[in-house]
Length: 322
Image (cartoon, rainbow, N blue to C red; front, side):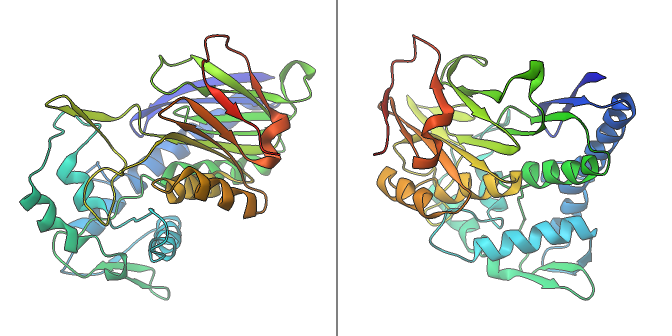
């Protein structure tokens, strides 16, 4: 039995497809788990487990669920690497800009400078034995938005693996998709549409033919703030306090699991096209597609045969690696 369930959680639209004799029960259980995870990982819900850490910043360590502790530990380790743009301690800066929310604003330089010292991931103190998290300074805040959907998707997959569904597609907001099992209608591949930056939802320029993989996209074209004719995007640079300066409008990563996809889409943003493509060619089991402001598409070597142009209106120059 193939069934679909649609939800609105974590500030986005979620679509779950499962083919299994007990698909209805499995979908109901996934929906219940998603509600739990939203309350655990949200950086915008004052009642969430993550927000309890923020509320105790500078005061006390907070014991947390093992899933939340694990993701914070992963995030801190990656954030300590200054060669990438991923930083889970960036919460105070995100809340200063609020891009993507109704109360978004262009902060002053004074406001930005005031929160920059609060974005040091080394000030996140973890205790493995007690499973506690302590933020050393008042005003610190962890933001897991760059990792949480991927981590949650992988938790859902762990649950589904117990029941061995014939097929499943987990779509968390369109930017995070994971497919498992047989493709629909006896096709050899799942066909995943890649959004054209700046166009309406559902306007796909490329189709990705994939199996048993996660597809994660990060871009600068949907969550923006316009001030005096200048557009600011939501991907912030933790070293400058301002949106990243980049010629790239979107990065799509194909990875064995969704968390890896989230990690690399965030970590690579802000680097040059040449640097990103070189890194993609060095990473095992990771492939990627870049789309730039000047309408160019760059595809990593291992991804070329799986990418098809399907929209005649897709006026982009595609660079196929040799």
